[in-house]
Amino acid sequence: MTSRSRRALAAAALVAFGAAGAGCGAATEAAHHDHHAAAASAAAWRPKAGLALRDPRQLYARDGVLKVDLTAARGRIVVSGSSVVAQPFNGQFVGPTLHVRPGDTIEATIHNKTDAQTNIHYHGLHVSPTGLSDNVFRTFEPGSRSRSVVRVPADHDTGTFWYHVHFHGLSEGQLAGGLSGLLIVDGLERLLPAELQGVPQRQLAIRNLELVRPDTVATLGRDVSPGKRAPQLVNGLLRPALTLRSGATELWRLANVGPDAFYDVSLEGHRLTVIAEDGSPVWTVRSHARLLIPPGKRFDVLVQGSAKPGSYRLLAHRYDGFAPQPTTSLATVTVTGPAVAVPPLALPRTLPTGTTRLDDATIARRRRFVFSFGRGRTFRALINGKQFDPMAMPVAARLGTVEEWTLENTSDEDHPFHIHVNDFQVMSVNGKRYAADGLQDVVTVDKLGGSVVIRNSFDDYSGHFVFHCHILGHEDAGMMKTIEVLRRGQQPTPPPMAGMKHHDHGM
Image (cartoon, rainbow, N blue to C red):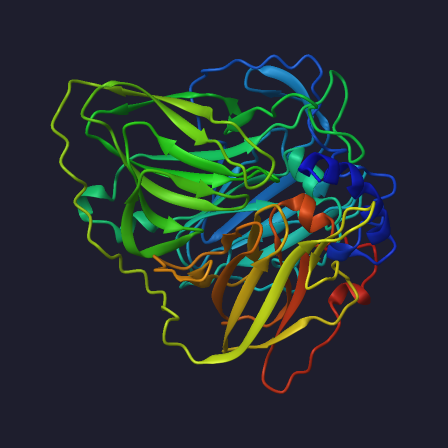
């Protein structure tokens, strides 16, 4: 069964979830809202390719507090020079970039001007999953104004994160419509040698624009762009252009902020030197010809302009782990200036990250999670043979312990595994020891028997949160579980949605 035929079967699965409960685990409006009801319309969209790359709007904390209003609303916006109907934050297909520093607080007000329930997730942040913080069990009703308060710890890692909707059952369609943006914890450059701390920075938020027939919005029961390919955008621009001076170094923040596409990225004639992965500065600095960026993943990389001026393509190579994607150009990089000798980057082998390796950690418990698809006419995405149940008792872990999890994939599609709140260390991939360069929060589990062993350190925060496949169509169809981290003496409890009201205005 192909990815597209699975998507055509998923509507019935969402209706089933709609009867289950509220918040993260329940699309109570699912029978009336297709998972792509928020996706951009194809009507008369004639994008201009080659526009100058520009960062999204930037918002910064003042006096330790970032106050931001995020309005989710459907309407006609301009994407890459042409008008299209979408449902983004603040009228931009890529929402504003939020900047904080360790110790700051995010005070966000989310205005839900759509006709469906939603909520918000601060992807990758090591913050509390309870109350008004990174709590995906909340429900923001249509027409509501909801408050979110996230306290970033003073010792938080610096790097690139992002925020996006996370209402289970509707997350893929709402994200396809544009409800996401970057979030940067500033200060990563301070880990670099002095001569590199002031290098120019760029943000590259990569995602697709899911189009169907003119004036037709993609829906659960139909193929997305039958016979066509969804255009790939960078910061909402089609194949944008940027310049890089020969021999100059820049810090690029690469992020996959789309609902389902994988990007196997390279820059012709250049290397990508990773200094942070998933917002966690690396222990070991390595230079790569290509980087696989699955949904939800981020890399902070240093790029040094080639000794040979000219035009180079930022490419996403053919990828067959999910819906087959041909090689495509994401952007054009023009290297300017006279040809110069370009010495290697003067980087240390390691960075002073402050994060702890888990190779020698005491393992409190070992667990196994198998990712698979169900049989039958209705598409079901499963973990350990079961769809997500919002009322089920959670996986229970103890605060201050380390667990080792084996993730196995028996399906015919790759699954990017993601867990909220805590990063993990990858120990092995497909039975072979993996020399991790740092911690991460997204890892791809290969299709048809692939396996990944990870170690989770449950530090600082107790409470309920989730882990899931970050192909959001899979998550919506059930490939997610709740975990509860318990303090000493606590016993597991049902997820908070089991007793919460449908109306959560949070103000």
